[in-house]
Image 1 (spheres, rainbow, N blue to C red):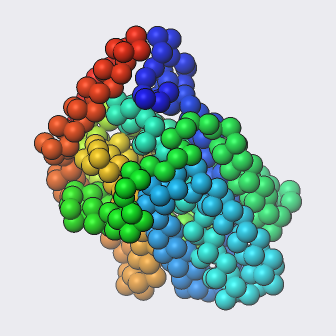
Image 2 (spheres, rainbow, N blue to C red; image 1 turned 30 degrees about the vertical axis):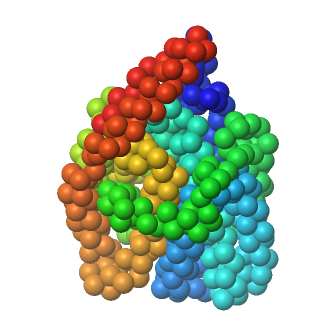
Length: 445
């Protein structure tokens, strides 16, 4: 038994609000890391276009970056099983830092597009290992009754940085130190966040191999793939997760130009709007995770997430266009969009309950979906923008969210998983009784 299996008679403030106390500094470090990663999110595309790159080249850069993110997101699960999440996070921090320097020095500063593609793609391997390695750590060290809230706090920190506070940071620093220096400042934020998370978080499970020692390396990696057909619900969850944030990454490509050229905003206004959108997103990340612990994970995802996003995506396009230059109206539409996308957060609490014996593998499938969204979104822009422009892309995403709502009907916790969770719950209760502790019984959805 570890310190996260039980709560003392006087739980800390962190425990009361849903953060596993031993992982508190990990959440703080993740927020700082993702702020650094999100600094460029709102202005890298217009920066590149203003320095000689075509819109198609920018979309391609984002697409191949997204492919790397997708691969790395999947690898975070089996590598955490093999080496422990903490080591995986160290590797992610190192990759991001090294290839960010290469991207800036040999890519942006000399305007070398081939080097930009190589360095930016390789840098894309970094943040998923750090962030999703921490998500695996959370799943391994958090009691099921707290998983919904812990997942909400994870996505609160994740989206709080990328792109919410990162874009807000850029909106203030660009007028003062310039665009290129702002890129460099992101490196310092990432390193600071990584060191806070890794040096101050001492929960023991994160430093150890998660998979049983009798499981081979081949078995670990094959298991993280084979779970997609051994437990088809993880495959469905992966597709739903891909759809979830695909629109976000597409919007980072097409919306800067739309809001500045069509709606009439300045770059600073666009960055501030982006921050408002994702401030809404991080607040509702937290709210949806807590709500899922009460109403059910699947209910929140299907109604607030899928149905809500199918409506909010066209609202975010048509309403600002109909109210040219009106920042308040655009912000309200963006808040609605950010809130509905956040309602997919309970997937991170649901999937470990679907596969309670293979939490890392199940989250690896979800990570694969999260990573895939980073290239699926820009790829849809690349493939379909010539069809009906931005308007056509808007309706493609609205339809995808409606399709995801149908898929969520399949995402219930199977009977065999309920039996495993009940046995795990009984084991924890016996441990608490032996130590004179008490706890609550998790509610399965």
